[in-house]
Image (cartoon, rainbow, N blue to C red):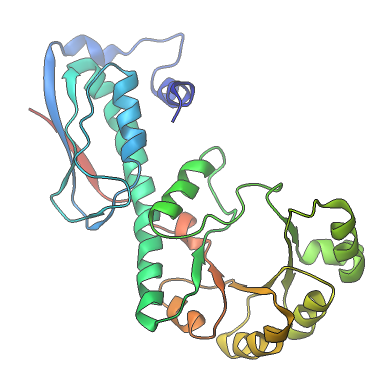
Length: 271
């Protein structure tokens, strides 16, 4: 995380034309402990360390990003100027809590799929917090998932509205004409017929959107001979991700990994 990004975040707490009144009540050097009240997967350790380092404190990480953690575990032991510790406290905890929540939700889905013996990949979506996407996407990776597209330039995604405007055939044809040979073309399909047509038109990835598992089972069999990557999305979460993995799809994308994950409960105590 760059200093510039840290400054942007810190400025939300102390705008450039204001002063941190709270700093007037503390002084001297102190040691602190950041610990978790929840089990989960640590994420945001690197970012939290960057916050304290920027403020002139020594962060001293105690766990690595991506490591499983349990209630009571210490994640960081920052030390240094008391003002720096308190000024960085909330931002560091916000980064750790939110990113660890995403990583934990991701690892849960990954674990559930591994128990089935399937090799289905758990992926995120672009349902992310504006301005915070790269942190949420990094947390997905730390949880063992795939971040999917970071932005609209990563791949060509032909969705229902593209098809409504241009038609499936023209949309795929134009994608082949305009996109680089290095860009994959993905088509969102809400029916088996659309999925098979997309594969026949040369799509690299077919996204089975909002289909029940029995429909997905049929689609996977039908698409088997086309050599496409088959992705399922829509209504998938920890409760049914294993069921979708058993259909044989290559990827399940789960928007809830970001927008519905619970933050881990973290605290900092100064000695």
